[in-house]
Image: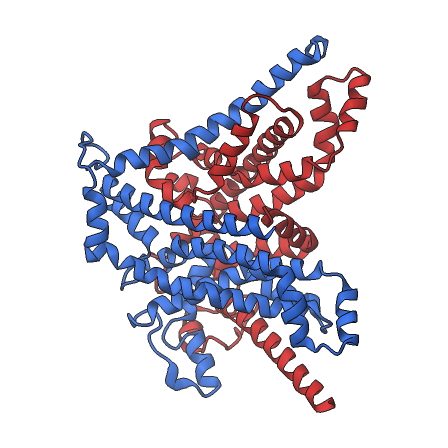
Length: 276
Length: 290
């Protein structure tokens, strides 16, 4: 019995360690390379740690030559507008559809539901023509409006959450003479905070990591975001992997910080955001 | 001023004003593209010319021209990858739902790749797969040096490498969802089972699996649509060269590189159909189980 228990433990921890190594190793190699000098990179193996951990030369080059500052700035702007916009739009739709039954309300709900079936990548061919004809091509608004207009998941998260907010709260506010707008603004919106956190997390991950929307709609250098700024490293730095690695690390660091500080919210957000 | 109106008028005002913008966005960016896509797919439009109606010609090209048809085969690699991904996610979620040392560390590490930027992951694995890069070094280290190959140069291997990268990227997501589902099973159930002499495998088979069956099937179907629409990883890493073009890469290139909007629309419509059918089957399955 004891031997069996031991064997089980070896298997359990052994597989966990293999899994952890598989997850960490590719990142670790990049981290090592980012601190190596050009010659050091060529002459040492990928698993050899850098000789000098304070060699920030590659980071400097990646940050300045790679225009990463522009990337971060644009990403933050797009992220903020999208999060605020999604929260407003999602909560408004959820409020109306959850609280009022009117002619066509089922149909509208169905329309939003149907839209979740359409995978975004497939319709780019036609979406591009629309964005272009609205004059939004190569402006930041292209990304913003696509993140706002095609994000139905947020509406679901809010709808799900709305149904747990008792209607009696609305009714007692109405007895005090509150308008519907006041009810939405002063009662519903504050109570939706946990749902808003979920939306921020899901949205934040998607927008920060999205590649094809900015790649397709905002090719202008001034408008590049983190993804597209990093993607541009591919050509000119093809042989200077240590600089590319520094760029990769720069893109990963904000994610790492966010993960460490918001771990619990991220786990909860994804779990509740995914069960549609 | 608004609050002076009676509730009936208020109700109407709020319904209209709260829905008008979201509905306009929904129509313009979700439904109009689909409608246009159907229309374009029946024309030979190149983006500038007049749209000339050519019937189902584009669809015929996609299904008969091997250059367009072979990308479906590439999807199979990602499809198989999906099952590996689900299996691993389920395995780690099960292990970590029991008592384990450093649980939070393992949970965090296994999940973290999912949060990373796709371009960063693509570059990371370009480096990892290089000759004498990370993977080769590790294989040599553990005595499997014979297995080394040009991971992205060998046409038989390239799609396995790319699908593997995809598994690395997305496994953490399924893992965390499964873990959440498993942890909602009350602890007493296991205790009762243990008293009855159930071992870990029995617990997995008779308690865990039945209670998360729905969420597993839901994730599996989502992952299948994901496999069909694989784009970012192969596009960033290889640009679709060396036989690694997926259906979406082919579509995007056809439209934006070669300007064959009509043909690309037909491809997009086909993909849309497949995804919608797969999802509809899942929804039906899902609601029956409920």
